[in-house]
Image (cartoon, rainbow, N blue to C red; front, top):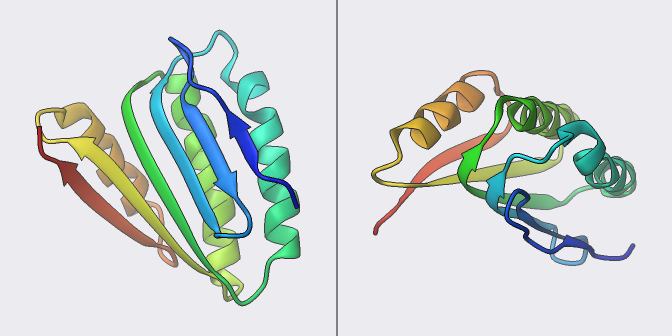
Length: 128
């Protein structure tokens, strides 16, 4: 399987999913005009990847400075899909990284964390 990558723009994050390393990364800001269509290729790739992977440890690093409500919905779908894989025996660790002075990012991370039972969800402050 090929690496999935998207370059960062003013309104979309850098996305880098490496199936060889079992490492998924999202970093930047997310307020595309249409979040569902922007993230659709990523979600399709993820679905194919999760259907092919077994007995692996998946690490997901998310560092978002800002994201809009439609992006939040996409991230919840992403985390729900990872939760399903974790329920099925794949070890999934999500690192939600936030800048120490960004209370909104921290609180959103807490809300995502509350909805997940089978993944390891770490809230990691980034020191400025």
